[in-house]
Amino acid sequence: MYNSGWCWFQDPRAIVHNGKLLVGGVAGNGRGDAAVGVYDLERDALLGRTTLHDQFDHDDHNSPVFYARPDGSVLSVYARHSTENIHYYRISNSDDYLSWGDEKTKTYDDSVTYMNLFALNDGKLYNFYRGVDWNPTMVVSSDHGKTWGEETHFIQNEVEGRHRPYARYTSNGTDTIGISFTDAHPRDYGTSIYYAEFRDGNFYQVDGTFIKNLAKDGPLKPSEAEKIFTGGGGGFRSVELSAQNSAWTSAVEIDSQGHPHIAYSLYLSNDDQRYRIASWNGEKWIDREVAHAGSRLYEREASYTGLITLDPADPQRVVISTDVDPTNGEALGGKHQIFTAQVTSADETASIDWQRLSFDDHRHNIRPMVVNDGEHKLVLWSRGQYNTYTDYYLDTVGLDLKAAIH
Image: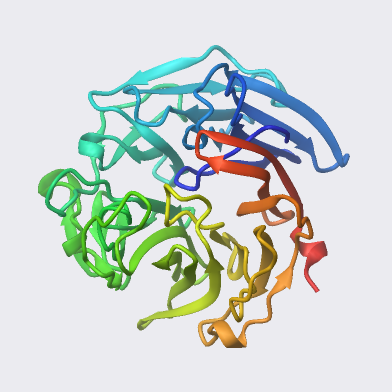
């Protein structure tokens, strides 16, 4: 998909539905349209790219996300980067997903960004986003996205001042939402990594220990969740630095045994960041470093890495983007490349055999994601020039991960 970028705090940015791959993105230049590209996997053919919303600020935080509705249609939801209090949504009305119904809106009291859609077996569709007080917030639809209820404050900041916990979400596909989140932005605070599960209106620790009821007791606070990694805890140093030893959540998935796996980055310096994975084995968390992440993407966002992600159907299948050798940290020549490996809970950086997937030495290859519907296992990423989150020239590319692995 040409001219499209995405951030990593909204999902799913791509889905496979009825044999077709749908990919969302926002153009990083020109009119900045929010768009969807469609690829027919059965025919091995690109069907096209269509605009969902013209002039959508060329900001990669605004990328559309998708939900496959029971009637075969697809819902797309998208929002600007906290510049207005609206989320937009449209429902497809064609089998090739290139034609969409009228755009509708849901209005909130606070500005919003970062849409995340998850359906559970209670018949409800959940949208998790940043909203109330710049905090993670939730809104629910009981008709598969045609209408939406009232917003609910979901996670509450505890760092003194106005801060924004960053959250990544996943689901076991039936009754549980897994949440990996931070205290704040890593530039502003030496952030830790936390985990909790949300089920039947309650928050729980991973072992099932009850924490609180959302409706009765209010939003979850970091101090009430499980702390997976302890960050430096220090404050703001500079717009060109992150706080010391600050972590940032990148991906979270739940495996077939119901065990969560959290992938995140750790800031050591502008030129030295690390990728880590924390895995629950049924008895305890196993947290370890798995790769060198290399340098920041640009100077104003010191904790922006190429990112680490996990296969949602097999979280031990890991994909990363780095501009250094993942094992020893030696420079690769200045551009980020895509690597994959099978990573067990016993592995650490020195023991992992990384396989390189991209070989473009002239353009960045960043922000990978894995789409796995059981039949297809695809890895997608952004390739091109990345200057800032509002100035980029990126295309979405990908490959069949099953075929690529050796």
